[in-house]
Length: 115
Image 1: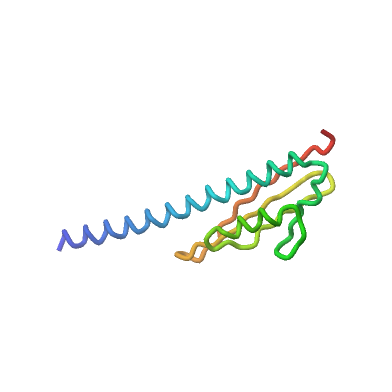
Image 2: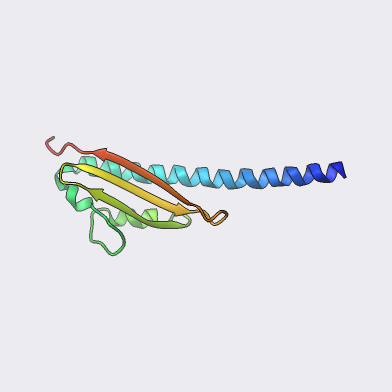
């Protein structure tokens, strides 16, 4: 009886570890995707306004990047906001099928367009 409870507890622990590992992997992917777009936006500061991406169907310099983001499991359409003063916000969201929670990774930054 004690052995059975121990084995069940171990199985539950392994399942939780697997779920957390998948969440961590998706966070790393989202971080890397945000870094890629951040780099493009900073290096193309003179065209910064062209990177605004409020969602699907929008003509934007970020559209091909958004296609890559949508390859994340449970991806929700990413958004990129660009203000006139160079303040930007990249937001990537995805949901995990195991727990129905929405995960969000946001990167706020400001680009100096005078350089």
